[in-house]
Length: 414
Image (cartoon, rainbow, N blue to C red; front, side, top):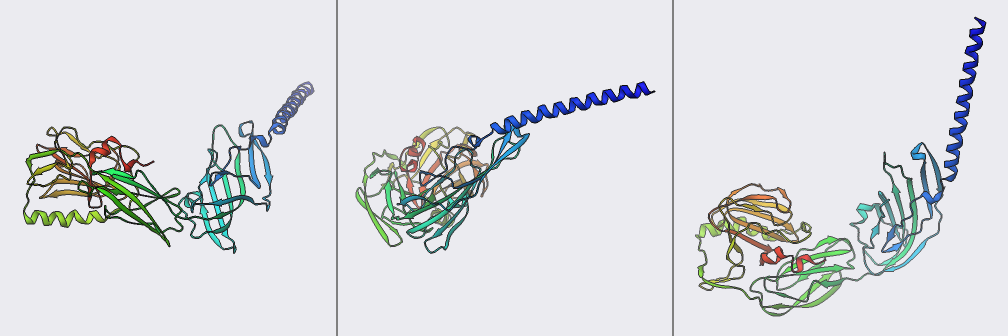
């Protein structure tokens, strides 16, 4: 019995020795890798503000050791130093996070110490300074990602900034001229505050949409716009800017054999009641990214702008497709009308933003309902035996749909 106990004791002692040696070995390995884990493991790519790289004044990071078995912490209490960024000539200096930045918090105060803005990086993207002056900003940018593989440093950098804003509105045009049926894109930067600028032009109404760094709008140059110079007058706050654009003649087809369609007064009144109010809706941001898709394939039996019998003009494109062919959304948008009209038959109206809408009429059947969010190329209905009418308008002014299918014109201003 004593011999057995001595044997058990020797085994236990041996196991204890192995455990101690293993612990020492593991501890040594961990200590080695812990000591080799330095601040060079922290994110290096800079955060930028107004296009300038920022220098942090403090940080708090936990860096994984051996894939996250343990962490080494690096801290620096934020100092009071301010990085001077100089003067920005626009009202929306952009905050750009590098790939490691998962969220940001921005706090801005004016020269009197009053809070001008406080919110997340996403909220700041919609912010515009309301007045010129000197400002201070504190920006905190984090990298936070639970269960990230491979494990990366988790924590944040803090930045303290000083800068001035001296902004005034500036108007940029996609072109200084356009053919009849075209579009001129407008970009306005340097607008103080959140109120959109206003444009006065005899060419048509525009709707401004806020974008990063400014505002965008699209001016229609319809088929019968008067040729020659036109004055654009932009108003933003107390500022007024003017610009000149030239309307040039387009070579529209002459198809006198095509008679303009006539409709009863009841059909015309129904169209005015249902469709005309849509002309005044334009508040959605632009939904398109590139050239549009032709909604249906087939032969063109009536071109946009064509001269018709009796002196009428075509405001749409009429395409003869095969019975049952698919009719699709030309680009992303929201269905604002889907129904049957005496004047247009089965009709779908898609709002693409900034006042631009597609009017697809003469379908055999509809596949969408009002309120549907469509993506480019998504089915909206089927063609019938009659031609499908494709019309595009900005407000109440028609534009040439063919330009959108080619990705040409001011709608595609970069």
